[in-house]
Image 1 (cartoon, rainbow, N blue to C red):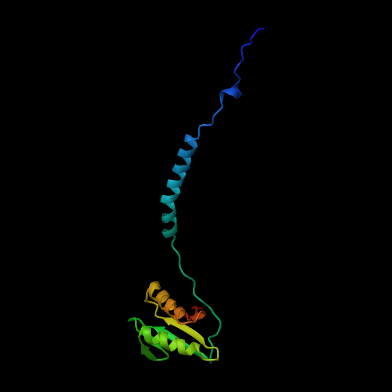
Image 2 (cartoon, rainbow, N blue to C red):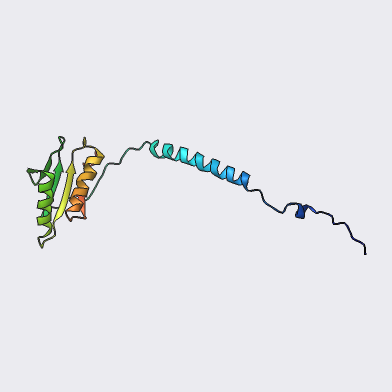
Length: 137
């Protein structure tokens, strides 16, 4: 019997795939996106639109106002945060549906308004109407 020499074809020469370059490329792209995404998120300049909303309710509503000094006013009475929660909980217990209007001075920070909304939400009101300034035409 004669043994024939096997010829190595190109297909049998590649019996393993080297994944190291693929992993290097993957990590390089991951690092590039991790660095550029925060820059893209905070680098966008926007100008909020003016609101032209529907008419405000004329009956069965209460208003919560955040003044320029940070004072919370509930229906013309200055209240603390705890007093506001107490009044809103008693208001929520009433059988009639009350619309709650939230007004804030434009100089107050976004964080202050969101904290006040969270306080209102913790008292049981899920639907709050934000009062904005009308558009200049």
